[in-house]
Image (cartoon, rainbow, N blue to C red):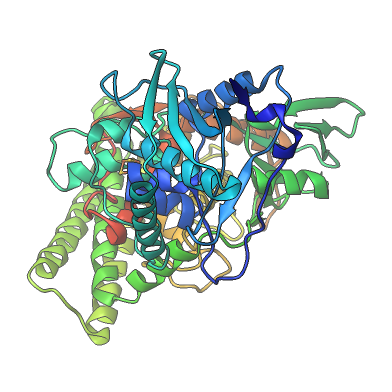
Amino acid sequence: MSSTIEDKSVFQSYFLAEKTTDEPLIRVMALHALTYCERLFYMEEVEEIRVANANVYAGRRLHEELEKGCKKYTLELASQELGIRGKVDYVRTDAGELIIYEHKKGHSNKGNQAWPSDHIQAIAYGLLVSEHFNRPVKELRIRYHADNKTIIIPFDLAKAKEEVLKAVKRARELRSSVQRPPVNVSEKLCRTCSLAPVCLPEEERFAAEEKEKPLRLFPAEDEKRVVHLLEQGTTIHKDGYQFIISLPDGNKKSIPGSNVASFVLHGNIQISTQAIHFCAANDIGVHWLSYGGHYVGALQKGAGYVQRRHRQYEAFRDPFFKILLVSRLCRAKVENQLKYILRATRSKRSNETQGQEELQANINRIRYEIKSLAKIEESLSKINNVDLIQYDRLIKEMRGHEGRAGKEYFNALSCILNLKEEDFLYFAGRNRRPPKDPFNALLSFGYALLYKDCVAAIQAVGLDPCFGFFHTPRSSAYPLALDLMELFRVILWDMPLVASVNRKQWRKEDFEITSKQVWLNKEGRRKVISLYENRKREKWKHPVLKYSLSYSRTIELEVRLLEKEWTGQAGLFARLRVR
Ligand code: SF4
């Protein structure tokens, strides 16, 4: 006669408190991850990166289904001797012996075997149950729901112990390291891995020249919304899993928390403590901008990024490594400026472009700066080290080339705008802090939004925005966010802005104009936000990785590729170009 463990009150709610040794117990699920891929184990257990994809949700739904209509018992067990803890799906007794069940929503291995990661999970539960009840375990049954198969594994206590202790030893070794293990599992496993968008295994294989074209495992679009709030006096509260936005005129709107990527609060907007807690717990960004469009700060979650930041600090201590990144970044920025100017002038009839000669001179001078940057890059390829004196000299040289090219670019920009001198948007060169004319006010506000997105992407990846490689910490702005912005100024803001100006989409009434400065009013800011957010949603084909994704996702992708410069295969950062 057999009976389920739930029939017996003695089996209700077990948990053996973990204590004593300094070594924390390893979750059985972590052993599952370790056997699947060491890199996955490291990212989940050590770096605490968790991403729930469709497979993860399907697994959770399966367990909810299985628990429906049953009395719910928690069978959580821990063993100091084994160094593990875990929650068992289901246990039955059969003639005094125990049978352990593990449910999986996927397919079995080749239709007749358990997957190695499921196997270790099941035998670890077998050991926990047998130790706790001091009774023999007869067998383990892994039920694969997708192909309706149950794989039975006879339980061999000694062999199971040996296997689990070996895995625990390896897990502890990995835990004490600050380095992520390399990508070394089969491509097939990566395709169903929830952490593929963080790990970017295909890009790693591509950079290592193991394949010609990476498969895109990185999400192409944002599934959630960025919510900008501009109405002064608006408040945000939380109600269950919803955000309630209360407008000053008494109207209320509710937004499901699961739909929000981040809030951008412009000026005097209140957010409740409960809403902030919810945002922090659910990776929802909160960014504060002043009424005038100055970036004030962001919600920063505590800890959790220790290993990633440690690796970043180590990498940025090497002046040669930094100089290589600077040279690549400067080339990317200046080449994008040139490509855009050439593209904008090509699409016009020659007599439409004002100041043809002047424009050609600007283009020639930008080309000259690119050549100079290329020479520096070439000289760097022949050495593998620089001392601090060389570093200072090279940085100054590159800043000089990049700065001069930028000046020529803005001069050229004024030529490709269809504006006459008497036009209120006429652009005669870049000025800021504060902007003194409407076009500069538009540039500055768009760049503030871009800066916010760069900070958000850096935070999402877990790097420290305070430590950059090109910009120095001279102002309160984050140097790494300023570095990253250089890749996107032209693509994400200059291009749509110039197009909107040439389409005559701006009115003088969109601005507040005084003799000393110009800023956008509420309507003007709304128009910028809409133009910018629409641009972010546009999809494009990455010129090197050859897959399509939105500009918005490209920002995060670049930060992840930057991190790969010191954690994996280098060479993909800052290679995007205007098409
Ligand atoms: S994507 Fe592949 S290499 Fe990366 S953690 Fe997942 S299984 Fe491992």
